[in-house]
Image (cartoon, rainbow, N blue to C red):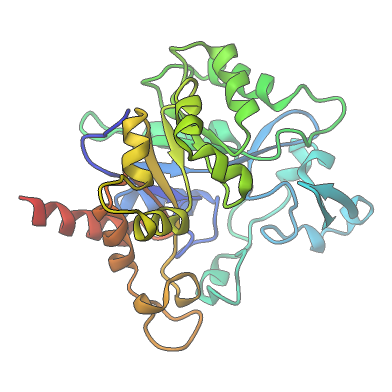
Length: 329
């Protein structure tokens, strides 16, 4: 997996620049706009069903606060070391989660998407995999880059996330390296566990790299070699990749080149078109929610040799890939 035939476009939670994230409409649109993979975040219900939400906390992406029958589920928990208050997937059965409706998670930034609030429900990982398979053709395979979130947060009676994921992928026939699913997580222990459960011939994996000291250690030469023992790719932030390229000394490889030397592909997250998420030279106007030069942003990353772009607007990444490819011909 070190170098792919061409860089892939990965629809981050679908195409959330245009539709509420993690909805069927968002995933379908991402495919229509040219995404090669669609990327759901995966969390667990109280009864062990793998569902797709950005976080296990539900209030930002669903209408749970409007459901009086769930008022007593409102609580506070420590998630990843921070106190979080709201409603959490592990406190709901899948049947209860199915009564909720998806809403736009960033209404101030993407007000047009609120027109779709309430139209779509919560999907399972299995439903996203089925959607990708239904949209695949002989000439174009659509794959699922499943990000496993909060593996240590689940209902006490549930099996661990690793066991649930391995069982579900086997059930769906998605447990092979050439199958529909690629797995990614910030948690190396979880990826190692799944590699042990599913074997060397199991799904391809990407190690997500945080912008923290832990992430810094992962992208050292020894850290990259370590990752290559269980994964086929790393997924650092766009900021980390660009900073690495800007700060590299003459004659030295930046992060993308170092990863390729370690036999790892590089997927970069997360590309967004709004000015608030772009560097100053790519912003257009002063409005935070105004659209900047998202195509230029993608072109800069592709020029560094990245193998995949995880993006909220797949159409911009496709345009950038086409432009960069044309320059190389």
